[in-house]
Structures are given as structure tokens and as C-alpha cells.
Image (cartoon, rainbow, N blue to C red):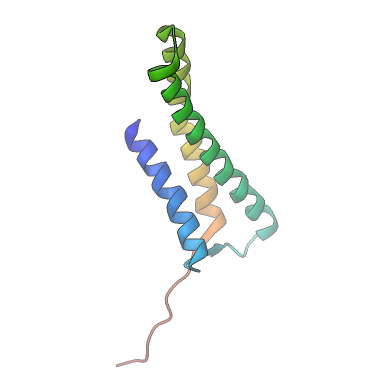
Length: 106
């Protein structure tokens, strides 16, 4: 679980950084489909990650009865790899890396 969470956080930060610096762009084929799908996948992965952190914080620090809180946390944790995989699938088809222009021949 921590591995998938680290992958998701790296992906979320990496996509935002690469889009801001022009190193990533949306795929030209079916652009009208992939732009909203990528935005929805990004928002979904970010929201689910925040919900997982909230459930973890609640289970560890705020819950008076820890068993139901840990069971709810287990539900979030078991579904998280599926959410990450679905978002990664959308990102794979929605984005296209910018290829650097080759320099002059030597």
C-alpha cells in the first residue's frame, strides 16, 4: 500500500509539473474525449488520496472505537490500487510526452 501511494503522489506531482513546464501535452487523437477524462482521473486520484489520508488520520488519532475505523480504512486501502490503475490507464492514453528537438547533425 505505501508503494502504490508513493507512485500516486509522484504521478500527481509529476503531471502537474510537466504540464506547467510544457514537457507533457494532451494526445492529439480524440482530444475532446481525453482532456475531460484526464481531468476527471486527476481529480479522482487526488480526492481519493486525500480521503485515504483523512481515513488514516481518523483511525489513528480521532476514533474512539478503532475497529470500525480500521475496517473503513481497510476498505479505502483495498480499493486504492484499483483507483490508481484506472487513473494511470487514462493518463497513459490522454498524455503525450514532448520529445526534445534534435540538435544539428555532427
